[in-house]
Amino acid sequence: MASLDLIGIRKSFGPVQILHDISITLKDGEFLVLVGPSGCGKSTLMNIIAGLEEPTEGELRLNGADITKTAPAERNISMVFQSYALYPNMTVAKNIEFPLEMRKVDKAARAERVKQVGKLLQIGHLMDRKPRQLSGGQRQRVAIGRALAREPQLYLFDEPLSNLDAQLRLDMRTEIKKLHQRLNATIVYVTHDQIEAMTLATRIAVMKGGVLQQLGTPHEVYNRPANTFVASFMGSPRMNLLRMRVAMTTAGGLQLLTAGGGGAVSIDLPLSLTPAQLHAYAGQEVIVGLRAEAVGLAGYGAEAHGTQQLVSARVQVVEPTGADTLVLLDLGGHDFTARLPPDVTLRPGAMAHFAIDLSKIVFFDTETETLIA
Image 1 (cartoon, one colour):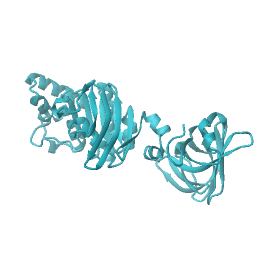
Image 2: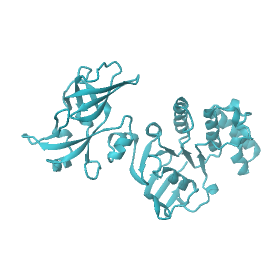
Image 3: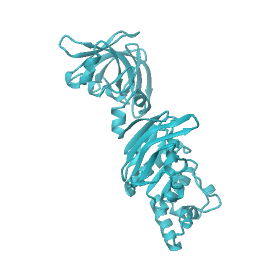
Image 4: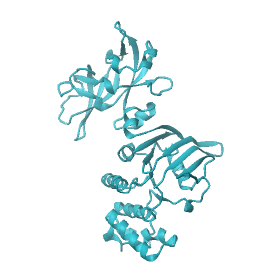
């Protein structure tokens, strides 16, 4: 397949800068997902890779060759759009075959390639139908099939599942994941859905305001977010973020303290789990980040031992989701979400004891909002 290098990509429309110095190296066979809120610049970056937009500054290299000013048709890149973009007057087979016909591929080779793609995507029985006779999921398979037929060096997916209902999105997400595993294709995928990003990507590029916030594996982005924006954007529910004061203990360790309408809460940090840089924040506030699943209800296999500590909190809202139960707590006057087993029964307004896994805590600077390593 292909490697892709984005080197110092900037894009401006008049005085408005859309992309700010984006640099990403994509290895052969990687699945890179560009994710972020609407207006963050991810689709603009995708269009630059496709050749539909030209960067104001920077360079693109495909397999080491400079393609910054290469025409889209000469880049050997296939793109799958959100709108499917199928020809309504053509059958499924003709839609898949059309890019090959435009490239003057031999008729017998075209027919064989269409047959292979139909088998791969399990749409062989749909070849004589027109797009209007297909469901949304089937249309998306045809759009993907048209991209596959060309056997390009690089695949681009621009929010391909946005027009599908929830169940179809889940099914097609699985199909795209399986497709990548079978083909070992190099893929760049744009979405605003962080669940899609987490499940599909080998690496995720999180963007905000045209700036690359973090580039890393799903595990890195989820567990070690580079800043509070990434911590809040990635994950459902979002990471709990609490302002707490760092205090020195008499034994020379560190303690986190907070106070509010629910009363004071203190957390003692074991030396083995305390970042060295955190000692410089003694007497100051930091932002403490903790995922919902790092909190367990005492008595449900979440007793305090080793790296865990018990805290008391008042239950505000209980939300059963089937697979688990989300509970909104009042922890020292701060809202705090815990993900608990599905059979947990708690009453709103009741006090309960919870065990916090201290090994899962991350810390952010209050001014820069960046991770304290």
